[in-house]
Amino acid sequence: MTALRLDPDQDALDFGASVRDLLADLAPAGVLRAAWDSPEGRIPGVWARLADLGVLGSLVPEDLGGLGLDVRSVLPVLIASGHAALPEPLVETLVGSALLASAGGEVAARWLPEIAAGKAVVGVGIGPGELVNAGPWADLFVLRDKDGRLHAVEAADVTVVATPSLDQGVRLADVQWQPGEATVVSQADDDAGIDLASVAVAAQLVGLGEAMLDLSVRYALQREQFGKLIGSFQAVKHQLADVYVANAFAKPVVARAAWSVARDLPTRSRDASHAKYAASRAAARAARTALQVHAGIGYTYEHDLHMWLKRTWSLTSLWGDTAWHRTRVADYILED
Image 1 (cartoon, rainbow, N blue to C red):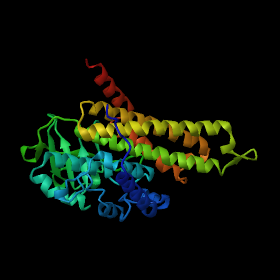
Image 2 (image 1 turned 135 degrees about the horizontal axis):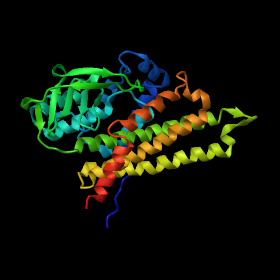
Image 3 (image 1 turned 180 degrees about the vertical axis):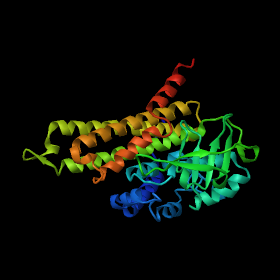
């Protein structure tokens, strides 16, 4: 039997390292906070740099200006974006480009080069729930009608009603539109887009868990109580160790799901939901522990931790919450 290799190859690891370095330079906590407080909600220059690195075109075919990769090769990039709590519509643009590439046709030929070049943002409304992330930013929407058909609808042909969010790094919207035959790009009633998005968001949650563990350890080695660093207390050590273990166990689950999605395996939906569930639980544990380690200051808007906490809470709900994905896994297992 051939062993299943889930670890990213060196090219993928280098890709992720390049993005992590870029975000450390262009999107540190102070810049991230400024983006949260701005009307636009985005970090100037980051989107163009991501396009220059090939991130935005990673799932776009090479003949249309992309890299022609699959989700396995961008997992380290997605983890890096989660680690930085990046307030950019990366998942939606990757999912939208993959769906358009799969559908092909004139719409794909027109829009995919623009997406890869960073000149177009895609909003995707195909998952559970009615709100679309990045709705106010999108130039093109990939939407699903009640019959399961996919439509590509330009921003001028929809009504976008912005919806407030606890996480100011995501910009949610209710997208109102009217399906028509002219906008249909695929007749397939398929959950491929939901599965891809679930894996991508799960990877970001892994990155968020790593970042909150880093913040917690750093604080525990600075904060003193009763004349000692709180990091020396056994109870704190155990909690931080539990966070590390939970994230370490979630990471291969996400990698396995990426393999299933890339190969379009029969277990694709089960594996994707398992990944989203496991990564959500691990990130939630990291968030809870980070709050306990930081104590009262961790609740305040003035402390940077709140941005990572709120991103965790929003991503555990977007593209299906833990209950939705747990039910999806159970339905797959019990369907026979």
